[in-house]
Length: 423
Image (cartoon, rainbow, N blue to C red; front, top):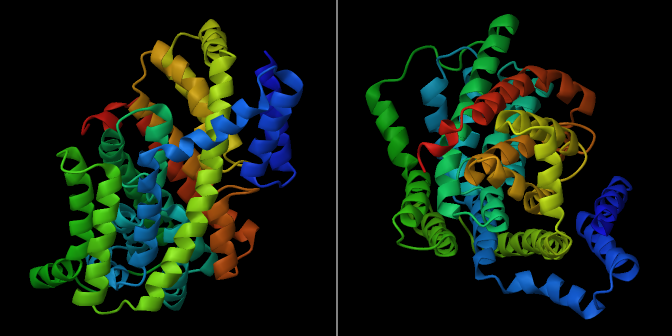
């Protein structure tokens, strides 16, 4: 049971503000030095081995895709389409913010990238329209939660690789939960807008030709989304090939069709992608070694036996998982938790008859909510910093939106068909 020392050591180092990958590396080295007879050369091999996985190439391609997207002019055209769809409703501009995240999620793939872009684009616009700045920041942060759930979110790819399930199935499973979260957020925004007297963005519903014009201008985003998901599901290409094809398509759109992209945009996007990919890869390398240790020590079997001794009801188990992940997500970055916890929980999930794809969506949604909660919610901190909003003001304004997301989480948790019907 020496493996049980790894997690407390790792989490303690994370709480001391050590970088995630350093905390994981440190815990692994401590295990091999003090708690194991396995040669250190094996530890090095387990750290390096995951870098040979070709499937990981999908991650930098989709990060690059999201980074390039902000320079193509697609975002402004999607905003116009979103504004036409909901602009006549109370709080229409705030709803358009959420719809932007939903529509952009299919191509930006990262909630941090989405939140950073919309915080600069939408919050000043909402403030000019009479919205409270803290509420505008909260809407932007909470709306960006939809991004990792709507395909091709990076979290879907990482979970698919760690849990050894089809990334294509994960993509399809994320569509309805993502739309459900967006719908509940817009209901919450409508109720808040009624209470505060926020006015519709439009005085009348647009004419059909205006919808058609906006849709025609936003077609590149739709093409990228349909091409990525459809190509993978039709076995035309792998997720990695889909990411590469999407990058080429967006680059063509930016340079040739909209003519808003420049060479320096591509250069800065490549630099940012290299940094983000390096951070993700370091965590994946460490997690691979952790997963190997858990397998060597039969940790998954031990956890499965302990959980099933408490309950053999899968819905009680999912409730306990929700509570655990919501608490851990307040302190630890979601990608690290996916990589560390999935190898431990997967035997329990299989033993209780829970579809691993459904469990993946439950897990990703939980951890996405964690990015919005103190003390270390990454999206909360990012949006608050960009918009110059105090954390306590952000949290106060986000409460009704977080409640809406928890209701959506309950639907996704206890109604597996929401995640599985399209797979």
